[in-house]
Length: 130
Image 1 (cartoon, rainbow, N blue to C red):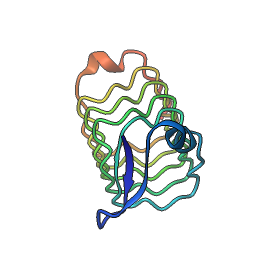
Image 2: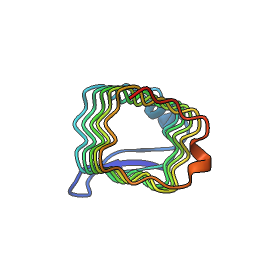
Image 3: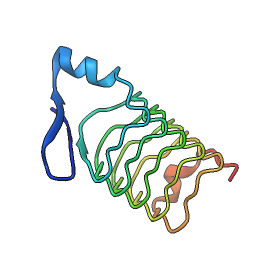
């Protein structure tokens, strides 16, 4: 089950099967999901320029996600799979990335000031030209 909730806990999007496919192929560019609670498989989702400050996305699958210019400041991304995600020019200030799988992720000019990172072996192929 995949869910996106607003900061008050109201479910904005939920689904499996055909509805799930609509969700994964959806475009959330410029969406304001500040403080949202997100769960499930959102691989390949387009969150370009979205506002996800203080969002809880712990344990999600965001492999190959488009996160260019996305505000993920103080977001909870613990244990999230972010393989080959593109964080170019993203704001990750204070984000919690402990235990996240960042293999192949792109961080060109991303701001990781104060971000919490662990498991260096998972970063061996991380791309960063910051």
